[in-house]
Length: 147
Image 1 (cartoon, rainbow, N blue to C red):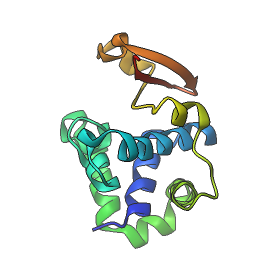
Image 2 (cartoon, helix red, strand yellow):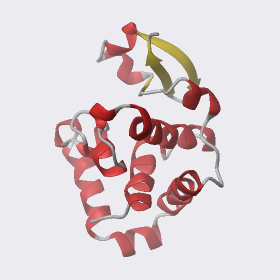
Image 3 (spheres, one colour):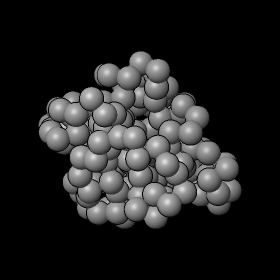
Image 4 (tube, rainbow, N blue to C red):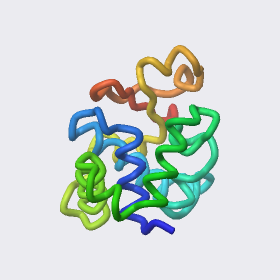
């Protein structure tokens, strides 16, 4: 089983590897805000990330190749970590967020941000219409539950 920093780094890498640094920090912030403020998502990093329908890379339904690649990375962690710079970079962000050397995105932390999606995914889902828009970073839009 992966440790918290590994699973969180993998989640950031799978969700935001093509996004700017701030977008990767934002995804990590969302994970930690869910742990801290949304008990129905789970109370641990593992519970939050592996909760069904929360992160597309954890669902075979989102695409077998995408899911299978994540399973391969987790199963062969040492080798994959060694050869994937994006994974190492995202794990560094995860560690920084966990240990406080990288601050959480203040706008998202203040709003206890709970959801984000890519601009392309916006056409497929409707949940964002009932939430308050916070900001856009790269191809991700961030939302919070309406107050």
